[in-house]
Amino acid sequence: MTALGRTLERHRHNLVLLGRFAAVGASGVVVNLLVLVAVKRLGPPFEDALVGIPASEFNVRWYHVYSTVAFLVANLWNFQLNRSWTFRSAGHSRWWREYWPFLAVGLVGQAVGLALLTVLLHPGSPLALPTSVLDDSSGLRSRLYWGQLIVIAVVTPLGFVLNKLWTFGTVRKHHRELGDPTHSSELLR
Image 1 (tube, helix red, strand yellow):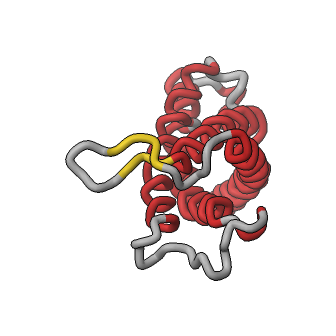
Image 2: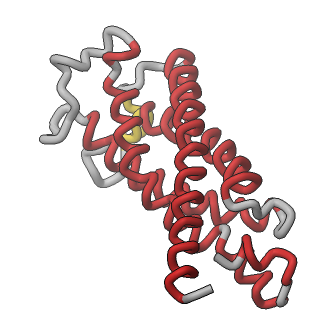
């Protein structure tokens, strides 16, 4: 195969991976939102302060907790599907060995997401979602749900890149170092 053919094949393979990652992510968005709806209904009002942040005027609010619970459930869901279907690494590394980097990548995204969610929901923020339209009178008019969707859209590309290179890339590197020819075509890309 020529160098151009290999380059085109690698890019085609990456597009397939991106498509699979997006499909898993879409299912994860549904899981995330279902969990968010459940915890929001079961808990106190999402804008209530839970605890003050020392030496600042800011608070951890219930929406930070709700978002984090939804993230943790969706993260586990996404990991398992990405492991078995997108990156097909399930037979090549122990579950915990891959999950911790995946969780770490997700936690970085969640930290960015919580900051963005705060900007979108804080009434004094210049980027706050408008309460005139999103008045929390119904699910489709919930600022929390729209804020969460925006957060997911912003952090997903970062998660894809970091997971491909780090979480699931370590499995490819391990097999390359071992000279494992049985998985070279799938894992070494």
